[in-house]
Each structure stands twice: as structure tokens, then as C-alpha cells.
Image 1 (tube, rainbow, N blue to C red):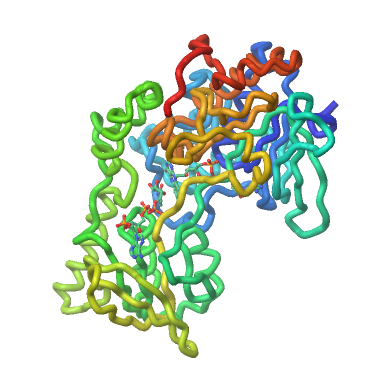
Image 2: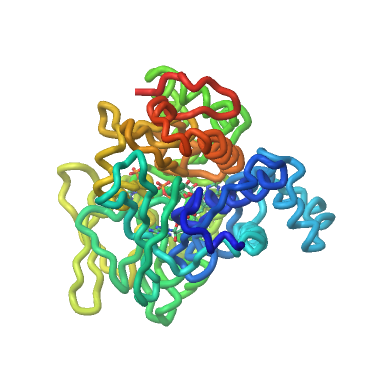
Length: 457
Ligand code: FDA
Ligand code: NAP
């Protein structure tokens, strides 16, 4: 019987980006070693086919993580789903090695992800958007499976899927500046290529890019290179782009053991992670990209051209549409008078908010326990700590920065995290059958670590 034909799945994944793809692989490989023999699974993805931040697949952009931090290697170095296995299958292993670069292009990594997903595609329902996760009204929570309402992404109806465990991995949520609505000329970076391709480039004579992170710098360079006739304004809140620290000691924050240090650390430890190492990821740009932008600007200076303008210490504070014009309000500091910049298109590369499953969980959210700051309490096994009576597991891949640290929204740890989740699901299976609330209470056990481990508050 194929996985699609089960009445109730042991695991339903919500979203099928790299995190849940890695989970599908961990489940597949756990079958091989006997542990996950009877674990049935189905993954729901709203896109019509696999795609990883497709709208940011700009030429020459590279990964920000080593190719060895792929979907499987850190969990299983002999996995046939590794990036090295993909290179071998593609006949490019020797050429890749000769290139002497730990950081493949995003294009190549995307091809790797597509290659890997093809091998588990029988467990994926593309074009399926999960609208809600809940419990049936007529059954007690301790006897109940979860019900997922799933809409066909083409709007052709909906269906219900039942699960003993859900793994929510719906990704980051785009953040727009206050007072700024998206439209055909005001874009978030997450929709960049799609919106850009809808416009005749000749119409883009003045463009602005807001933000000082990796997305902003990549888009600024792209627009400068693609639109030789255009003025490009980079609206940068800092004095200039800051470098992403990926030096070896700082990179230790993405070491697998850092998850335990963060999770089991004190509030002070967790605070230190963020205070000292936020610049490994947020509002920072890769060294070579900063230098390539500066080089363009400087070459223009030498030629007496001013095509690339950096508006530093400036934020976008609003946008007005006047006829065909997009008027961007720029604020140079709190309390200062805003000034206007008229452009043909504004790209807000203004970052993302963390994944928030609350809207999917609806009433079920009331059974999810929270800390004093209102954030989910999450077990070391990535399972939301729920009220005693709920026997089903709600796991998170993403949205756990407050409990598991900086790698929560990144690729660095997905192979091990997926393994941890599979181990937890397998370990809890017998307990679920026996309807024991014990594991729910303490947040679960993985890899033999104590069931009674205190949860971070
Ligand atoms: P991801 O966002 O990739 O996938 C979530 C999926 O869920 C999407 O396919 C979405 O369609 C689907 N979905 C959402 N809601 C749904 C619903 N209700 N029902 C069904 N499906 C739903 N990190 C890193 O470590 N190294 C890197 O090089 C990069 N590079 C990078 C580039 C760019 C442009 C961005 C914006 C981000 C990165 N990141 C990164 C960080 C990024 O978060 C990470 O690479 C992964 O995308 C995380 O994978 P996930 O599967 O968790 O989310
Ligand atoms: P980000 O790092 O969060 O940066 C967002 C930027 O927008 C910050 O500089 C922020 O400044 C600025 N900003 C916010 N509001 C603004 C406003 N009103 N006006 C002007 N600027 C404003 O987001 P990101 O660059 O999209 O990166 C997100 C993640 O994706 C990171 O993990 C990154 O590494 C990853 N990424 C990777 C690649 C790649 O692999 N090649 C490419 C792109 C992105 P403040 O901090 O001052 O608010």
C-alpha cells in the first residue's frame, strides 16, 4: 500500500521545503534500519512543484552554508541523499572538487534539492495548502487524531487528512515596512523575480531597494547589472552594509552541540548567543558581495557616473501611489522630517518574521503551553508542550529560535533536527497507542536523553 492510502498517517508534514524534505529522508532511512518500519507519512505543499526561494535564485548567488550541511550528511554521513551523492549521480563530483569551494551556487543547491525530492515524491501532495489543524468536536483529545483541512491550491475544493503527529514547517513570513502595501510596483524580496519578470525592464529607470541584509545586497547588485540605463537607490538603515561573520569560532554557534548549549542553557546563555552572534545571520552581507558592490560604485566614481546611490542611515517609512508613480517616504532618523523619493519600483528586502503556526492551529492552540513571554514551550525533540490530554504530537521545524537557537530558521542543522524528530516519533509510538499522557507532559526524549529534562521557561 502506498503512503497516500492510509486512513490516519503517523506523520503529516505541513510545508515541503528543505526542512520537511530532510524529514522525509530521515523517515525513509529509518525504514532501512528497521526503526521506522511502520511510520506512514504524507507531506502537504501548497506550491505546484518543489521550489526553494525561487524568487531569489539570482545569478551567481551562493549558499551561506557548507555543501556538507545538506539534507542528510550530519545525521548519516553514508546517506545516498547527500550532496556528494547528488554530485556523483550528476557526473560532476571531480569537477566540483576542482572548483575548491565549500559554497555551491543557490542554483546548484536547488538542483540538488529537486533531485532529492524526486526520490520521495510519492509521499508529497503538491498543490495542497493546509488551512487548519484541529481536533474533531465529538472525540476526547486523548483518543483523537489531528484533522487537517487541506485546500487544493487551484481552488478546486478541499479534503480532510488525519494524523497522529504533524510537523509544521511553513517557513519564514515576509516582513514589510510599516505603512507599506505590496502591489505591482512595491515588492517584497521573497517575490522579487516573479514581479520583476512581469515588467518591461525599459520601464524601470529608477528603482530602490530597502534593507541592509543579504537579500537587499543581492537584489541591488542584480538590478545594477541588469538595468544599465537605471538609477539604483539602496536604502540602507546602517551606515553601510555589515559583514556576515562566518569565521570559524563564530561559526561554532551552528555546531550541533550549540543546540543543546542553547536549549539547556540559562536565560543569560541564550541572551549571549543573540547579543554576540546575531551578526552571523541577521542584517548582514557576505564579504565578497559587499566588495563587489563597492567595486561597482567606485568604478562609476572614477568614470564620473552616479548610477548606484547609497542612502545610509535611512529607512522606508511609507509608500504612496500617485498615478503611475511610486513615492517612497524616507526617514533619516526618529523625529526627522521624512523626504520623498519617486521610483518606478521599490523592493523591500526588509527581512522576515519567524514561522508562526498559531493561525493554523486555531482552537488547538489553546492546548499548546506557553512561557511567560507568550512563546510556545517546546521540548528538546521540537514538539510543542501541550496540555496533558492531547496524545498527538505537534512538532516544529522553524519558529524555535527562543528554545533551540540561531539555527532554527536555517539549513545548518536540518539533518540532525529531522533525525531527532523521527527518533521522538518512533519512541512515542507505543505510548501513543497506550494513550499515555506522560510524554506530552515532559516534552519527549531523543537519543536516550532524559525524559525528565527540564524545559526552558
Ligand atoms: P521553507 O520556507 O524553505 O519552506 C516552507 C514551505 O512550506 C514552502 O515551500 C511553502 O510553500 C510551504 N507552505 C507554507 N505554508 C503552507 C501551508 N499552509 N500548507 C502547505 N504548504 C505550506 N539558510 C541557510 O542555512 N543557508 C542558506 O544558504 C540560506 N539561503 C537562503 C536564501 C534566501 C533567499 C532566503 C530567504 C533564506 C535562506 N536561508 C538560508 C534561510 C531559509 O529559512 C532556509 O534556507 C530554508 O528555506 C528553511 O527551510 P524550511 O523548509 O524550514 O522553510
Ligand atoms: P534580514 O537579514 O533580516 O535583513 C533585513 C534588512 O532590512 C535589515 O537590514 C533591516 O534593518 C532592514 N529593514 C527593515 N525594515 C526596514 C525599513 N523600513 N527600511 C529600510 N530597511 C529596513 O533579511 P534578508 O536579507 O532577507 O535575510 C534573511 C535570511 O535569508 C538570512 O538568513 C539570510 O542569510 C538569508 N539569505 C540567504 C541568501 C543566500 O543564501 N544567498 C540570500 C538572501 C537571504 P534593521 O536590522 O535595522 O531593522
